[in-house]
Length: 327
Image (cartoon, rainbow, N blue to C red; front, side):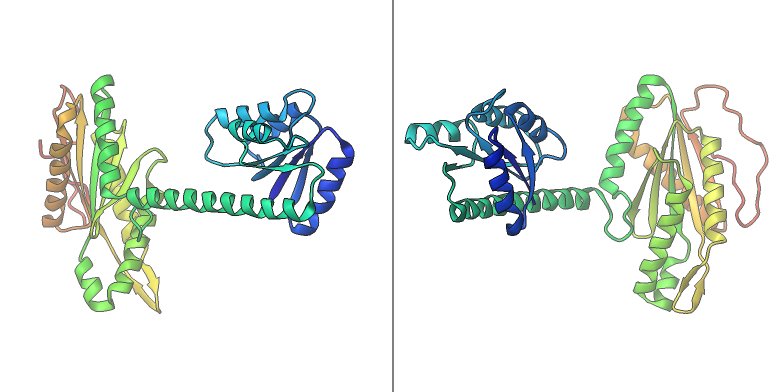
């Protein structure tokens, strides 16, 4: 762990550095309060700092006050080093934001013990932050595939629909479902089924734009929210996904397992924000139309057409063909 040693006395700095390194700490030196404050306010701030009370520039008290004035995720344990041993002085240092203190001349064993306390505090805080980050990730992501989960995707869909309402931009929702997934589970087992789910999730992730939302909606069903995407373009995206999945078999345990997906598309132009459920239902209905039409294909529908919205009049009925929208 890095430890900042801030003192204007070179002899004291040299002594502290000599003590810290055998104890397993990496010393970072500062010659005055201004330099110490700059280091402590940086992204690379050390986990522990030993700050002298009286230094040129910012005093040790002012360094502590300014560090504590700005809340940061990363915590620095501040130890005030002072020749002032009066209780009032110690309380002033703690009041300014110091966590602990040592009185000069510094007794090595005492300093080491106080550093270990600081190390435990900083480590506990890092563990807490990691736990919070992990909890936030699990709250918004599907553990198996690493994609966003249903709740997170619906939240983003709501935000994108609101933006579409404001600026009149298009938005498309795609619902994709792995064809005959139950048969894969029954024939090869659920472990293989999980591999297939991750495989298809990776293909979907590869297919969409970086700012599109892709989520595991439930079971073997996936949701894609494509802001700024008109319905024909979303249908083309669905077509590319169908072709990619159908030509990318899963290799596992010596087996080559072919898969395909059916996709329903609901496109919206000039939508109303209260239509999240309607858009999802429309995409789901188109998905089932694709399933009933032979699977491994795309069916699309444009909701609330604002006027002229050209669409090819033909139907492509090949195995991975694109069905025209039902309006």
